[in-house]
Image (cartoon, rainbow, N blue to C red; front, side, top):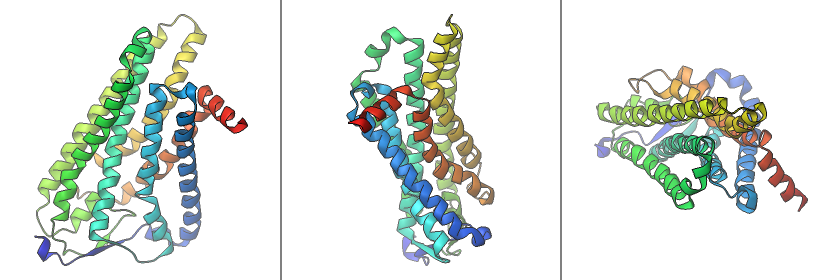
Length: 305
């Protein structure tokens, strides 16, 4: 099948309806990208050098920040190119690699967020057993398991896309290589790839979402049983940042990818996907630092030193 492929590169349309705003959007997205790299990189450094942040919660947070850096890097540089160059091209293999890493990191982020909700559940609902349950070995095992599972779920789909023949045009109506627009250009049956994609998203996204929801049901019920209002406020503040990030991330992704077919229109998804690939990684470091006294204290100590 690969020998019959007549298309060796794709053209990314980006946002053709916003052509008059391309220069302004380029500057805006570039600033956001720089702030995203700086903010998430700063969290990694602070967690690494600060002794008071050597806890499971911040270990998972640094993993999330590391993931966000690469998650945005897979998409934003090519997006910036679409704002400057009218005909932005990407080679076939580069397109599949971009798609693979984008979805691999996205699935991994779901799993990392679920682990963080489990960590908050243990910390609030079983505080006396927290140190014995959330050991370094368990934290490392959960993190490696998340990265490994994300890789396995997406790899088979990417490998099958590489074998597809493409002869139905080479224009992708998106600013990155999303799976749906790629499959619309294939000249072969893509039902297996669509099934694998649906199976992966339908198994990981709802299950991780359900796990997070159940964790927070127990967390909130435990917080409500705390007698003092100060104690309730202190307990809720430890999970408020994570809850905010989960709401934004799940809301955008559930809207985009839980669909029965990969041939759905992507026009409405473009705007929503910007929230997920551009704004959420930017907001994460600010959400986790503005309301977090421990991170602000560690950051201030590092600056003063």
